Length: 320
Image (cartoon, rainbow, N blue to C red):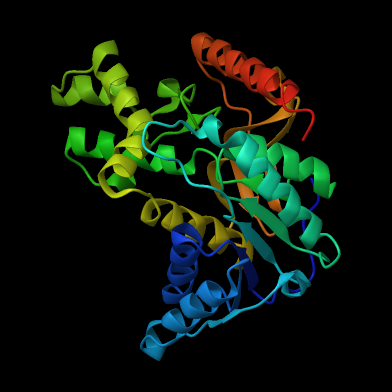
């Protein structure tokens, strides 16, 4: 995969200034990850209001330049973050958003193209795997330059649940969810570890119960958290904003990290021509490399089933 070698200006464009886009801009600012942030939205007054609200904070809490702009500001960006799209309503799953959000994404990509000159494109809107695949095809950039947040948030939720169960800090828990960012996501229990110790071995050592029923309950909880939060407050935005900041830090400050994000697979795990989350090295060029871990046989099988399912979905939307 090709990396971006030119000097970074830490310039970011965020397309879509709803709750997710605005929260991402705020989080990037207070962590001083981006030098310049441009908010782009069809509702220009909202974009201007969000930009003003952010920059009026105490200066030493964040020194980023934040402004509203238009698609011309995508030129020379190090990172373009696309959050534009309809949000899930209570009772909907992510795939229910396909028709509306593909149409929105196609319009966004058409507007980006005349001004795109460099940088990575991060898809945050849902269904993220479908939109990442479509954006990658439409933009026709080097492999890995377009990618989606994928299962980074699901994995973060899982780590929190496991940490709470074992009574330790999240920093000692290492584990990933791969595949679809949705109902068929796959927890890679075979690689889950506590301070480097396989989780089943750790639980045995400290006398904690650990069996298939506990794992299934944790998986069920993670899958349902997004819907539960939407039912409670109508939207989710804080969790994904912190995940985007983590990714942006890797891209803008070239702090290589490994996270499960969605990109178009090129034969990894025996799967190609579909966008799914796998552990990936993230850097200045986006997905620098997708890692091929050794999983349990049933995990490979579930992953290939998920890939086949998403391919059938893609075949059904060829008209877009």
